[in-house]
Image (cartoon, rainbow, N blue to C red; front, side):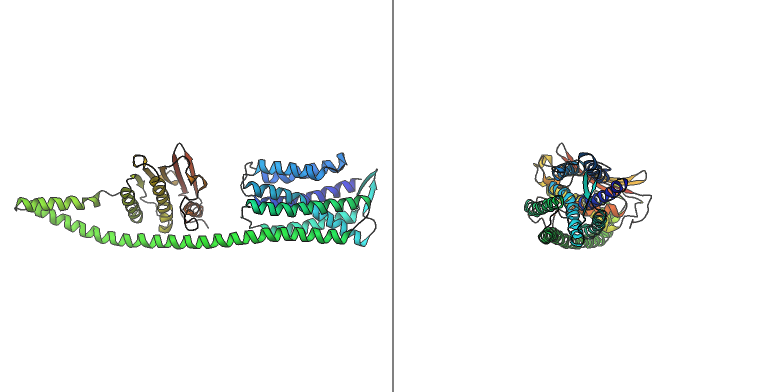
Length: 430
């Protein structure tokens, strides 16, 4: 009895591993810190308790599915379709492995069950075969699903549910055969294997297409960022030439004003000097490259009647690469301008604060937005959603590169972007 209890526990743990692999391949964001470990542990505890203390397995599958779905929904905050589909798969795939083990052992021996104190259980060869198949299945599933990032849509979810219904039907059929001691192993084996294979092939193809689309989108975004970087580099060179001319002009105009001349001459000199005085008004951040970005965005904001305010001190902040500065400020301010354009002119306000704060560089971009703004989903309202709307994801990637964070929030009609980068690292984190 002790031996069977032990080996049954090992078999149940191997099923819990499959559940762990499947659910954590489909779901990536936890509500509960230890949720991804608690789910398989609670499943193993319930399965083991049911086997040895309830005995009657009539509602075992249904109870397990309901419990695992409930726990998964409580522990994860991913797409609901992903959570439910993976929770059901996490129960059915171990069940399928169990049925396959019984069918396989039944092909080679007539003794697949043993009577222990009046309880009918699988034989030791059946248990060992089941554990072996579970291990193989877990490794294959990890290899197949380790990079799964696709969020199931309604149609995908229905297709997966149909496959799962077929698996439930033939798995239950196999268990009935196991109880009564009769087997139609060929039909069960073919249907179970084909249903499972087609289900995962369908999911693999969906995910593969999604990853390729993401890769293409990332390439386009990188190309766009590089163009933006080249644009600001050229602007910086032009600005240096203009500043040099500006200083010479300013000195010449001062001389013209001070010399004896006609009132018309002095008035013309004063007028010209006031027109070029805008070059003294733009924001100095302590970083020449960032100066050009802020000047360019401030001009765009003024053209759209947006109140643009910036308090930036990047003096001594040298570890952030120019391309990433462009990513943080260029994308962040563009998003703020886009959101402001949808507001009445009197509500168009953009505030930027950035600088060193203890051992961190902090960047804050805040703007008013519509209460129902789609910025909540960190995407865009632009028509071309393939090319636009991924600025925030690029900012997050750039922040992670330095070991930092990029977070967004929306409340009381304000959208806030916060970027925090640790200065102590002093270099890019691989």
